[in-house]
Length: 102
Image (tube, rainbow, N blue to C red):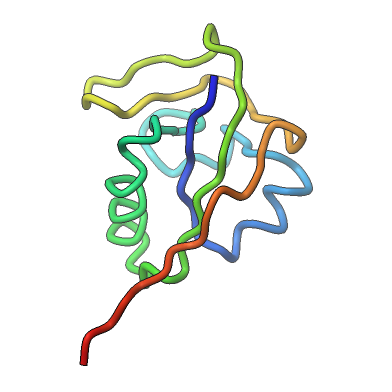
């Protein structure tokens, strides 16, 4: 099943080398957080606000994980995986581009 994970660009080398590690989760739950395609925008904004970083520093990763490994969180659309996601199941989906009107 395809899911998406938003993270800061500075984390990308370690993720591509080691995968997404649940032990590095910063939320209350030790898990890899993910969203379906329709929630990518929400995830990008959420990570940028939580980390207090510019939107342009956010990368969206495409995860290919077994359906049975995905758990639903109370917040609609947000899901979690209670295991590490190996690097071979991760691809860069997009980097965020911010259009500025000036």
